[in-house]
Image (cartoon, rainbow, N blue to C red; front, side, top):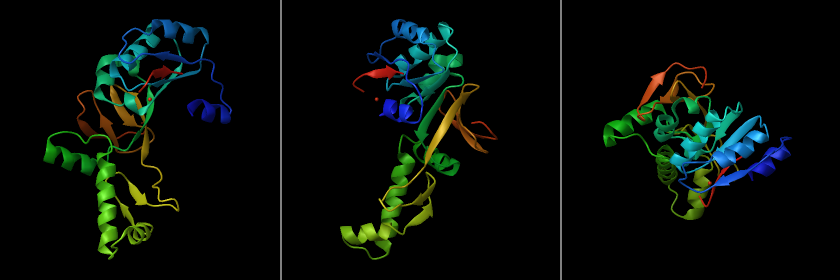
Length: 212
């Protein structure tokens, strides 16, 4: 899907390399990638150790390419393991939630929200709002959800004609050892220890893992 979408938008995939999950040495793959002189490298990995290895060895080989990654690269293990090799890495990820949601979740449970925690909270809220209209069966609930709108823990909740909620994904960039929402003011920053802080900012797959 990635290749098809990228080429469909006019891009060119000059190489694609795979590596086994949890491997710590991807120098063979990185060597081949370097020979292709790519403008950008997209790393798809759900293994933090392998992603860290890829980032560090890309830097080790002196490859000057823009770095992009899948959602699996969003985590303190990447920041702590790759350190400066992760600087400039961009990833897309579902919203961790508003700062208020993160603060209240941490206070209640003693930990940061997990993946899709904010989305789960909003899903339950939307269902409750639909039931409050008197909806009693599937069809009635579906129709009620069609007009539900509210500002939720993950962002603005509005269902389209297909019953989907658009957006609520963020583009994050690693700056100074932290994930920062790119292009956002009052951005949520997640540091190596995973603790979120408020900071003024203007920047902001697993049978096999793949580096593209």
